[in-house]
Length: 284
Image (cartoon, rainbow, N blue to C red; front, top):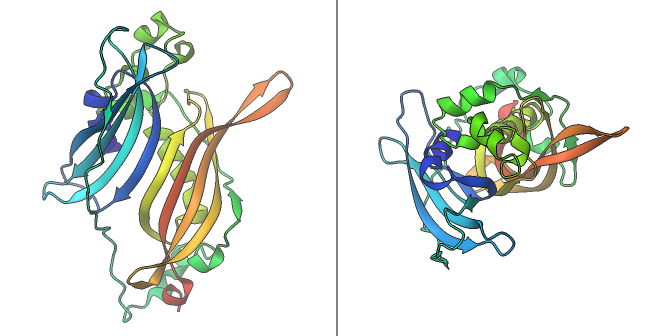
Protein backbone atom coordinates (compact mmCIF):
# COMPACT_ATOMS: atom_id res chain seq x y z
CA UNK A 1 0.00 0.00 0.00
CA UNK A 2 2.68 2.51 0.99
CA UNK A 3 4.68 1.86 -2.21
CA UNK A 4 1.74 2.74 -4.47
CA UNK A 5 0.78 5.67 -2.25
CA UNK A 6 4.33 7.05 -2.25
CA UNK A 7 4.53 6.90 -6.05
CA UNK A 8 1.63 9.36 -6.20
CA UNK A 9 3.16 11.91 -3.82
CA UNK A 10 5.46 13.77 -6.23
CA UNK A 11 2.59 14.55 -8.62
CA UNK A 12 -0.27 14.99 -6.14
CA UNK A 13 0.73 15.83 -2.59
CA UNK A 14 4.32 17.08 -2.47
CA UNK A 15 2.89 20.51 -1.65
CA UNK A 16 0.14 19.19 0.60
CA UNK A 17 -0.58 20.40 4.11
CA UNK A 18 -2.43 17.24 5.10
CA UNK A 19 -3.88 14.02 3.76
CA UNK A 20 -7.56 14.29 4.68
CA UNK A 21 -9.25 11.01 3.79
CA UNK A 22 -8.83 7.59 2.21
CA UNK A 23 -11.86 6.28 0.30
CA UNK A 24 -12.73 2.83 -1.07
CA UNK A 25 -9.25 1.29 -0.82
CA UNK A 26 -9.45 -2.20 -2.38
CA UNK A 27 -6.79 -4.87 -2.73
CA UNK A 28 -6.18 -7.16 -5.71
CA UNK A 29 -3.26 -9.31 -6.78
CA UNK A 30 -0.72 -10.14 -4.06
CA UNK A 31 2.72 -8.52 -4.26
CA UNK A 32 5.90 -10.62 -4.11
CA UNK A 33 9.62 -9.89 -3.97
CA UNK A 34 10.75 -9.09 -7.51
CA UNK A 35 7.47 -7.49 -8.59
CA UNK A 36 7.63 -4.03 -10.15
CA UNK A 37 4.81 -1.67 -9.26
CA UNK A 38 3.62 1.37 -11.16
CA UNK A 39 0.91 3.83 -10.16
CA UNK A 40 -1.48 6.02 -12.13
CA UNK A 41 -3.55 8.83 -10.64
CA UNK A 42 -6.67 10.49 -12.00
CA UNK A 43 -7.79 13.86 -10.64
CA UNK A 44 -11.45 13.66 -9.71
CA UNK A 45 -12.01 17.05 -8.17
CA UNK A 46 -10.55 20.38 -7.10
CA UNK A 47 -12.14 22.76 -4.59
CA UNK A 48 -10.87 25.90 -2.90
CA UNK A 49 -10.97 26.30 0.87
CA UNK A 50 -13.68 28.58 2.25
CA UNK A 51 -11.64 29.35 5.38
CA UNK A 52 -8.12 29.82 3.96
CA UNK A 53 -7.56 31.35 0.53
CA UNK A 54 -4.13 29.72 0.29
CA UNK A 55 -5.50 26.17 0.54
CA UNK A 56 -7.69 23.83 -1.45
CA UNK A 57 -8.71 20.18 -1.58
CA UNK A 58 -7.72 17.82 -4.38
CA UNK A 59 -9.66 14.56 -4.78
CA UNK A 60 -7.79 11.83 -6.67
CA UNK A 61 -8.04 8.15 -7.59
CA UNK A 62 -4.81 6.15 -7.64
CA UNK A 63 -4.37 2.63 -9.00
CA UNK A 64 -1.26 0.48 -8.69
CA UNK A 65 -0.46 -2.36 -11.06
CA UNK A 66 2.32 -4.94 -11.27
CA UNK A 67 4.47 -5.72 -14.31
CA UNK A 68 1.71 -8.00 -15.65
CA UNK A 69 -0.84 -5.19 -15.56
CA UNK A 70 -2.75 -6.75 -12.65
CA UNK A 71 -4.34 -4.33 -10.20
CA UNK A 72 -2.72 -4.69 -6.77
CA UNK A 73 -4.43 -1.71 -5.16
CA UNK A 74 -6.87 1.05 -6.01
CA UNK A 75 -8.09 3.87 -3.79
CA UNK A 76 -9.26 7.45 -3.63
CA UNK A 77 -7.95 10.11 -1.32
CA UNK A 78 -8.58 13.76 -0.55
CA UNK A 79 -5.59 16.02 0.03
CA UNK A 80 -5.38 19.55 1.42
CA UNK A 81 -2.89 21.35 -0.86
CA UNK A 82 -1.26 24.76 -0.74
CA UNK A 83 -1.96 27.14 -3.62
CA UNK A 84 0.96 28.72 -5.45
CA UNK A 85 -0.86 32.07 -5.56
CA UNK A 86 -3.79 33.33 -3.50
CA UNK A 87 -5.39 34.85 -6.60
CA UNK A 88 -4.88 31.81 -8.81
CA UNK A 89 -8.00 30.56 -10.55
CA UNK A 90 -8.98 27.01 -9.65
CA UNK A 91 -10.70 24.64 -12.05
CA UNK A 92 -13.32 23.65 -9.52
CA UNK A 93 -15.13 20.57 -10.75
CA UNK A 94 -15.86 16.97 -9.74
CA UNK A 95 -15.99 13.87 -11.96
CA UNK A 96 -17.02 10.34 -11.10
CA UNK A 97 -14.27 7.85 -10.23
CA UNK A 98 -13.26 5.35 -12.87
CA UNK A 99 -14.53 1.82 -12.38
CA UNK A 100 -11.54 -0.29 -11.37
CA UNK A 101 -12.24 -3.99 -10.86
CA UNK A 102 -10.09 -5.86 -8.37
CA UNK A 103 -9.73 -9.59 -7.75
CA UNK A 104 -8.42 -10.29 -4.29
CA UNK A 105 -5.70 -12.93 -4.48
CA UNK A 106 -6.38 -15.52 -1.77
CA UNK A 107 -5.08 -19.09 -1.48
CA UNK A 108 -7.70 -21.69 -2.35
CA UNK A 109 -9.14 -23.97 0.31
CA UNK A 110 -8.17 -27.64 -0.11
CA UNK A 111 -10.35 -30.02 1.90
CA UNK A 112 -7.71 -32.74 1.57
CA UNK A 113 -5.07 -30.72 3.43
CA UNK A 114 -4.58 -31.24 7.15
CA UNK A 115 -4.90 -27.64 8.24
CA UNK A 116 -5.47 -28.67 11.84
CA UNK A 117 -1.88 -29.87 12.12
CA UNK A 118 -0.71 -26.29 11.64
CA UNK A 119 -3.33 -24.59 13.81
CA UNK A 120 -0.91 -24.28 16.74
CA UNK A 121 1.10 -21.74 14.74
CA UNK A 122 -1.59 -19.05 15.01
CA UNK A 123 -3.63 -17.43 17.76
CA UNK A 124 -6.30 -19.87 18.95
CA UNK A 125 -8.71 -17.04 19.80
CA UNK A 126 -8.81 -15.07 16.54
CA UNK A 127 -10.96 -17.17 14.20
CA UNK A 128 -14.17 -15.70 12.80
CA UNK A 129 -16.26 -17.49 15.43
CA UNK A 130 -14.39 -15.69 18.23
CA UNK A 131 -15.66 -12.21 17.41
CA UNK A 132 -18.97 -10.55 18.29
CA UNK A 133 -20.27 -7.24 16.91
CA UNK A 134 -19.89 -4.60 19.58
CA UNK A 135 -16.67 -6.01 21.01
CA UNK A 136 -13.87 -3.47 21.58
CA UNK A 137 -10.31 -4.77 21.77
CA UNK A 138 -7.63 -2.59 23.33
CA UNK A 139 -4.44 -3.90 21.76
CA UNK A 140 -1.81 -4.15 24.47
CA UNK A 141 1.35 -3.23 22.56
CA UNK A 142 2.70 0.19 21.63
CA UNK A 143 5.32 1.27 19.10
CA UNK A 144 7.48 4.37 19.42
CA UNK A 145 8.20 6.34 16.25
CA UNK A 146 11.87 7.34 15.96
CA UNK A 147 13.75 9.56 13.52
CA UNK A 148 14.11 6.42 11.39
CA UNK A 149 10.83 7.57 9.86
CA UNK A 150 12.87 9.91 7.62
CA UNK A 151 14.88 6.99 6.23
CA UNK A 152 11.79 4.82 5.75
CA UNK A 153 10.00 7.62 3.90
CA UNK A 154 13.01 8.03 1.60
CA UNK A 155 13.23 4.30 0.88
CA UNK A 156 9.58 4.40 -0.21
CA UNK A 157 10.41 7.30 -2.56
CA UNK A 158 7.93 9.61 -0.85
CA UNK A 159 9.20 13.05 -1.85
CA UNK A 160 7.02 15.25 0.39
CA UNK A 161 9.32 17.76 2.09
CA UNK A 162 7.23 18.02 5.28
CA UNK A 163 8.57 14.58 6.21
CA UNK A 164 12.28 15.22 5.64
CA UNK A 165 13.23 18.90 5.13
CA UNK A 166 13.75 20.29 8.63
CA UNK A 167 15.28 23.52 7.30
CA UNK A 168 12.19 24.33 5.24
CA UNK A 169 9.82 23.47 8.10
CA UNK A 170 11.80 25.58 10.60
CA UNK A 171 11.51 28.70 8.43
CA UNK A 172 7.73 28.80 8.74
CA UNK A 173 6.56 26.87 11.83
CA UNK A 174 3.03 28.31 11.65
CA UNK A 175 2.58 26.87 8.19
CA UNK A 176 4.23 23.54 8.99
CA UNK A 177 2.51 22.41 12.21
CA UNK A 178 4.82 23.87 14.82
CA UNK A 179 8.12 23.49 12.98
CA UNK A 180 8.44 19.72 13.40
CA UNK A 181 8.77 17.08 10.70
CA UNK A 182 5.45 15.25 10.34
CA UNK A 183 5.74 11.48 10.09
CA UNK A 184 4.53 10.13 6.73
CA UNK A 185 0.95 8.93 7.26
CA UNK A 186 1.68 5.49 5.83
CA UNK A 187 3.85 4.76 8.88
CA UNK A 188 1.21 5.21 11.64
CA UNK A 189 -1.31 3.61 9.24
CA UNK A 190 0.76 0.44 9.09
CA UNK A 191 1.84 0.61 12.74
CA UNK A 192 -1.82 0.52 13.77
CA UNK A 193 -2.47 -2.42 11.46
CA UNK A 194 0.56 -4.23 12.85
CA UNK A 195 -0.31 -3.55 16.48
CA UNK A 196 -3.76 -5.04 15.87
CA UNK A 197 -2.51 -8.11 14.01
CA UNK A 198 -1.88 -10.40 17.00
CA UNK A 199 -5.50 -10.02 18.12
CA UNK A 200 -7.17 -9.68 14.74
CA UNK A 201 -4.99 -10.82 11.88
CA UNK A 202 -3.33 -14.06 12.95
CA UNK A 203 -5.98 -16.10 11.14
CA UNK A 204 -6.64 -13.62 8.36
CA UNK A 205 -5.90 -14.34 4.72
CA UNK A 206 -5.90 -10.66 3.84
CA UNK A 207 -7.61 -7.30 4.05
CA UNK A 208 -10.43 -6.99 1.55
CA UNK A 209 -11.28 -3.29 1.62
CA UNK A 210 -10.90 -0.07 3.58
CA UNK A 211 -14.15 1.86 3.13
CA UNK A 212 -12.81 5.07 4.63
CA UNK A 213 -9.91 6.24 6.75
CA UNK A 214 -8.32 9.44 7.96
CA UNK A 215 -5.48 10.85 10.03
CA UNK A 216 -7.05 12.78 12.90
CA UNK A 217 -3.85 14.15 14.47
CA UNK A 218 -0.20 14.29 13.36
CA UNK A 219 2.55 11.98 14.59
CA UNK A 220 6.07 13.19 15.36
CA UNK A 221 9.33 11.43 16.25
CA UNK A 222 9.11 10.41 19.89
CA UNK A 223 5.39 9.67 19.87
CA UNK A 224 4.25 6.16 20.81
CA UNK A 225 1.42 4.69 18.77
CA UNK A 226 -1.31 2.51 20.31
CA UNK A 227 -4.43 1.03 18.74
CA UNK A 228 -7.89 -0.38 19.46
CA UNK A 229 -10.44 -2.21 17.33
CA UNK A 230 -14.24 -2.19 17.45
CA UNK A 231 -16.01 -5.14 15.79
CA UNK A 232 -18.93 -3.86 13.70
CA UNK A 233 -20.25 -6.80 11.67
CA UNK A 234 -19.65 -10.39 10.56
CA UNK A 235 -20.70 -11.72 7.15
CA UNK A 236 -20.15 -14.64 4.79
CA UNK A 237 -17.39 -14.43 2.20
CA UNK A 238 -19.05 -15.01 -1.20
CA UNK A 239 -17.98 -18.32 -2.69
CA UNK A 240 -15.76 -19.23 0.27
CA UNK A 241 -17.56 -21.24 2.98
CA UNK A 242 -14.20 -21.60 4.80
CA UNK A 243 -13.98 -17.82 5.30
CA UNK A 244 -15.99 -14.91 6.59
CA UNK A 245 -15.69 -11.13 6.37
CA UNK A 246 -15.07 -9.26 9.60
CA UNK A 247 -15.94 -5.54 9.49
CA UNK A 248 -14.11 -3.52 12.10
CA UNK A 249 -13.09 0.02 13.00
CA UNK A 250 -9.41 0.45 13.78
CA UNK A 251 -8.42 3.49 15.83
CA UNK A 252 -4.90 4.65 16.55
CA UNK A 253 -4.01 6.90 19.44
CA UNK A 254 -1.13 8.41 21.39
CA UNK A 255 -0.85 9.85 24.87
CA UNK A 256 0.27 13.36 25.81
CA UNK A 257 0.73 15.06 29.17
CA UNK A 258 -1.16 18.32 29.66
CA UNK A 259 -0.67 19.99 33.03
CA UNK A 260 -1.25 17.16 35.52
CA UNK A 261 -3.40 15.11 33.16
CA UNK A 262 -2.65 12.44 30.58
CA UNK A 263 -4.70 12.95 27.44
CA UNK A 264 -5.51 10.22 24.93
CA UNK A 265 -5.34 11.69 21.42
CA UNK A 266 -6.85 9.82 18.49
CA UNK A 267 -4.45 9.90 15.53
CA UNK A 268 -6.02 7.50 13.03
CA UNK A 269 -9.40 6.05 12.03
CA UNK A 270 -9.98 3.20 9.57
CA UNK A 271 -13.03 1.17 8.58
CA UNK A 272 -11.70 -2.17 7.36
CA UNK A 273 -13.01 -5.51 6.07
CA UNK A 274 -10.89 -8.60 6.72
CA UNK A 275 -11.06 -12.12 5.28
CA UNK A 276 -10.91 -14.43 8.30
CA UNK A 277 -10.67 -18.20 8.57
CA UNK A 278 -13.47 -20.18 10.19
CA UNK A 279 -12.36 -22.44 13.02
CA UNK A 280 -14.69 -25.13 11.63
CA UNK A 281 -12.51 -25.47 8.51
CA UNK A 282 -8.97 -24.89 9.79
CA UNK A 283 -8.59 -26.62 13.17
CA UNK A 284 -9.81 -30.16 12.58
